[in-house]
Length: 361
Ligand SMILES: C[S@@+](CC[C@H](N)C(=O)[O-])C[C@H]1O[C@@H](n2cnc3c(N)ncnc32)[C@H](O)[C@@H]1O
Image (cartoon, rainbow, N blue to C red; front, side):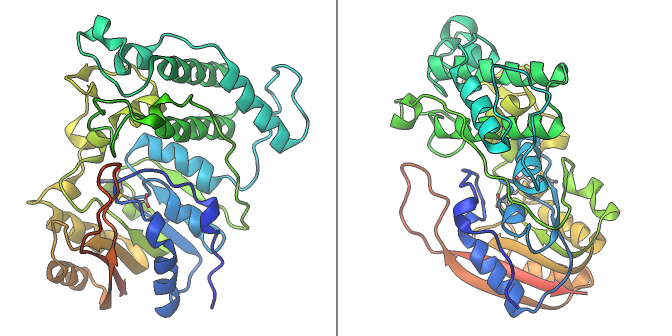
């Protein structure tokens, strides 16, 4: 059986720790060689939404992540099966052809004059006069552009000029454009002292291709434990954080741009306030074992596929044991070398082993 996957060229390379972009074809090889079949595929920790997008022609995807910016991406990259029409948006003379119309809307937003809003004030050098700390995540020009575009999207949605699908489509395009001009070396845990050449480029919204599929797909923005007992699926793909780096702190700025909720921010990096609930239990050395056991025991799936790696909190022996006590049989492990998450200054090869565990009930 050949799985009908979406070509890699149509999967955006979103920079996220633990993104599975580079192992997508390995993942489908594993599913094929294990002769795993079914209709529904539950991606419990969707992150960049790359896995769900890759498999959306083969399965009905149920996708989830506790981060809101991930939910935004899932809505566009996975859930959309056709281009949103933007039929109620009456700006300039928009084309009636769906793709052309979207390109014109993106152009309109790209051309809109900058606004001195939350991002400009707190995440560009302008923050020096406002917060007394100079933050260099974006150039001042790009900070103003982000604010202008983000505000317009919100106004259009508030006035019902655009519906939810259209709203998430535009937000996804903005998040992707933001990543391309961020002055960071990997995550938003810190900004670079010196301007990276990418941050000197002007932020530009780009067209996102919609991948049609005969299946319906769903996206959620929930803690995995609040969802797993409500979803029945054939295949559960489980890709939790594997070390102590919290996503909410490393991607705080994407979360703030997606939410645009003017949060309380702190310190040198302007990190947004977050609650205990927003911290992932899978990042805790003490609690990760119990958390994975609870997840696997309660997941309503015929097959569980777990991604992890050799530098993770849990050892492969511990994981085998967790599969066993959670009611999964004949668990198999696929191991292969993996390039470490690449930041701008760190592209050396390493000997990290990537793991894919497969268990069945
Ligand atoms: C390793 S990443 C997933 C990467 C994803 N497979 C990809 O290719 O982009 C782990 C994800 O788990 C999410 N996460 C962590 N704890 C969670 C929880 N308790 N419930 C839901 N999502 C969680 C994080 O926000 C992060 O996006």
